[in-house]
Length: 372
Image 1 (cartoon, one colour):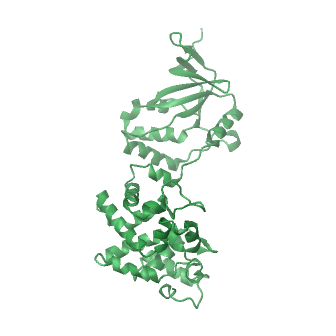
Image 2: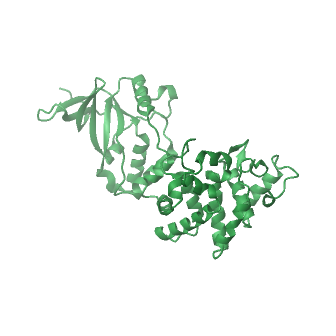
Image 3: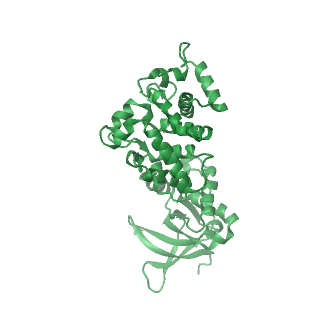
């Protein structure tokens, strides 16, 4: 009679690629109680999994703690490095009890960060201990098979675009603001791509939701009232006022111009310009709350052509290509602020001074406001 101590739990037995596997519902407490083999100290070729990124744990744990009534996790995938015993229940072929030796090693093939985050969340919310998560168990037949499982599980995993993530995110207030502005705008609802985070050459859109999200957040910083509809009206009023100074945007919406032609020819149809217009707009509304619309007329005095290398090379472009580097974003903000006669913040002034003293700034380069 085998008296070896075992762990027993109900499972559903399945068959995949000729091999048995088992699906169980584990309480979150069990994730902490059952030992999971820690192989962080092993070299990569001897591991079955990537090393855990500890910096990700607080963010995932925070997600659980902040959404205790509607968080969701997909199943963990675990290999069992041991022989097991499956005992059918009441003659059921697929439903039964799985017995696993107490000293067996459990190796997580997919979900190690979820497990670590759940354990951290349990420290702050012990009442979560009796909630459950699905766990899929495979029988491990060696390191090579375990490594192949990790490779296969991640082979076709594609992270959704940031725009699509924002579109489907109903918890993020800034996301809700950007989506409401787009939905209520006569122009932006037709020129913002709600799904992709990079625009294809043949796209009929000018901006992505992810870029517009960033711009809206910058625009309403310290201006937001907390009333979503009111804040969306503020943002929509600003963006539609800005759009009147860029006729090309409306022509793209109306189908009179190809968006690809506009993006190839002008800076103003890229995310970097959208962010610059947002930052400058934030300062403009704060400084001139009563006549900011009239002051936007200065935007017409900027030559937004990409061919205007005298202004944009080194500022919004590097080697003729749009740059998303934070320094270039700041330098583009500075150009818009200068034309709107807005003072620069300390960090913006520092970057502007460094730019002017740098190798890309020639002695005969005039002030930004003189470059039209």
